[in-house]
Length: 123
Image 1 (cartoon, rainbow, N blue to C red):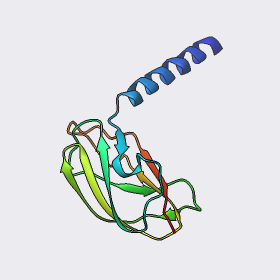
Image 2 (cartoon, rainbow, N blue to C red):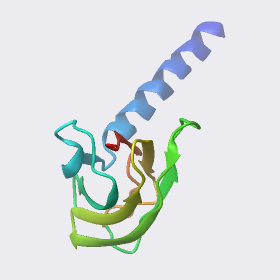
Image 3 (cartoon, rainbow, N blue to C red):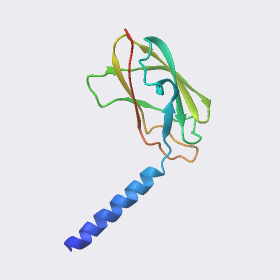
Image 4 (spheres, helix red, strand yellow):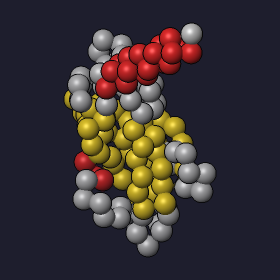
């Protein structure tokens, strides 16, 4: 019985990993590719997705680091079916986290794999 349970757990783990690898995802955020600090003030971020997204669905969450500054999205819209542009207002010399949440869905209705945006602002 124990061996059967272990086999079932292994099979479920494999299936879960397989399904997760097939989810749409964020390929990159244009402004964060350089790895440099972001200028403070009002800024735009271009979020690129792996496949066309349903433009009716989007959402952002606070990152897991409770010490990180909260980043509020002031505006947002799709530039194309694979690029979401958001506007945020950033304070100087802060650490930010913003999670692109599973509220985003592709045109087939599949939710995305969450993506954590982490960055710092200059002084």
